[in-house]
Amino acid sequence: MAARELDEQLAMLCHTELAGGEDSLAETVGDLPRAELERLLCLAVVELLDSQHDAEKQIARVARRLQQGRSR
Image (cartoon, rainbow, N blue to C red; front, side, top):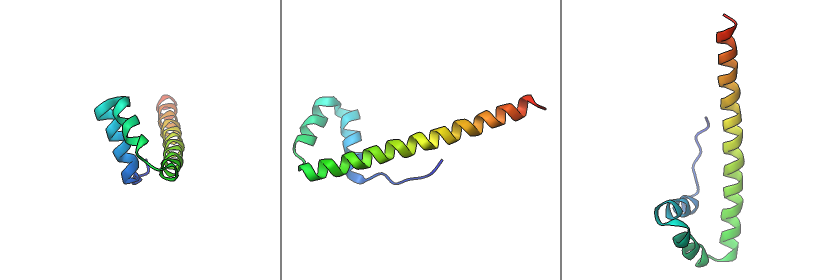
């Protein structure tokens, strides 16, 4: 799995949502300028796609190991 650094502000928004729920996130996001929201959305999409790719590689790796174990 690749180690990636998450944008500090995006991480803060994730933490805000987890800690305070959807209402606190809406309040925090409401205070951000549109350009910053667009930047964070782009970063979030890239992180999701990268995470999906990493997960798919990990699943394929586990599947190969299971297949190798069965063929022994």
